[in-house]
Length: 218
Image (cartoon, rainbow, N blue to C red; front, side, top):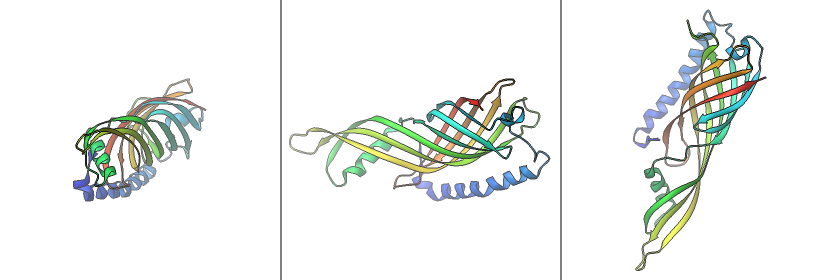
């Protein structure tokens, strides 16, 4: 996780630039010599979708539906990585306590879930490996984090107390990946990296993510 509170205006500029450049790149690709390109999953057996599993952040299930030869929408859900750095958790807890005096003792993440919705475009890799193409796109993500926080009260005889906090992070996501369709098989595999930007509530951050997985196509 990368806190970007000091450079918030630059991040906003970058997101806006990405949103402007992305469609332009897609349009240029559609107007190029490979404008009739069909993604590798649809090329031979005319598959229109796939369901599978992925490892990474999040770790869980993936459902992908292909349309217009090279476009796809995807839904992902599963367990998110809850290991956000300790500074984040301490600041989160401090904000929840308001003006109540306390001494922070530690935390434990008890649940972390993530849900993603994406739109991507597949493109040809020039002189690439047969059955392999690349894709890019944008989406939205929701992460639900639940944890318990231990703290000492500021009294003559301090007591160790525990508090439960649930947070929901929302924001856009940019994705870049590759997909390989196994020959003479309904299976395909993929690997990708992405960047999630939390934009709700007061503390905002950038979170690099990634994952690999496999799907059964139908």
